Length: 338
Image 1 (cartoon, rainbow, N blue to C red):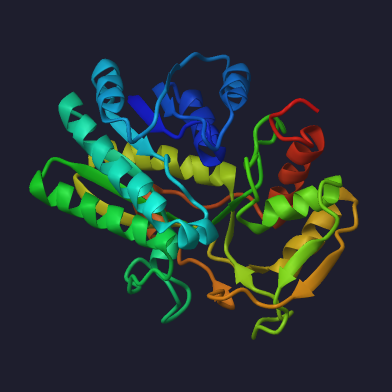
Image 2: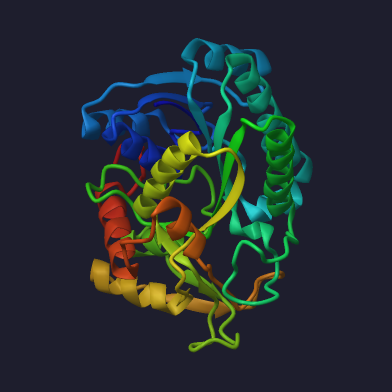
């Protein structure tokens, strides 16, 4: 199939790019490199020994997006491009609504011009909000609690309406939980351009010496060790879920929301201990006050992903930490020269 990846140079995008190239899909990456590096694409090309097209462009640049889609004529679009920091979204909500919602409208209009009727959307478990029950399944009420989550929810609604309007349109909404880890080669991994948004990059940077200590936000939750519990998923498993979703989109019509998680929760201190084991380094940390809006536990029911996509996670927390350490230790400055 011909696969158009928006944000294909990013953390999840680059791992998915590698996976779809390994399955002999033809690929075009569309990325503005605002939170990614072209070097990621160079490394994927070397790892796979395969070529692909690259267009540098912003999802808000409607003419450029439209022309790129018309020129490539994809069978399916995988849409990663978007702002993704919860904290930043509360400070700059208009930027998030513009980029994530308006950017998706630009993409859909371009897809219609190019005759493409299939999309796999990078959604998020943040659409669920505070848990009414655990684990979260796809029937759980949707009540996001921050602008980032709201943008994902709004795009899901748009895609559902898009599929309703044309019964041959297909949208697969992948609701991620907590992607971590890196490719086994250590050549590609998570390299945030600014302050990291989640736990693993902080732990990695403490281990490699870029940060002095980890801050643990709260140790008085009703969890086994008092720290927050999350559902971590290896980014390579997540990339395989996208490849499976591409195949599913080729054979099905309509809109499906699917959780992408392991179904198991790990605490902050579980991650710290696993990373210490993987790296052989001590991870010093300070316990600080809880962050507003954080919840005690958050994990998926991934049954639907197995039933519809034939997909389930293969990597455990030790694999996640080991691969993250290999990436960070080989690339202490990320994709920038050491």
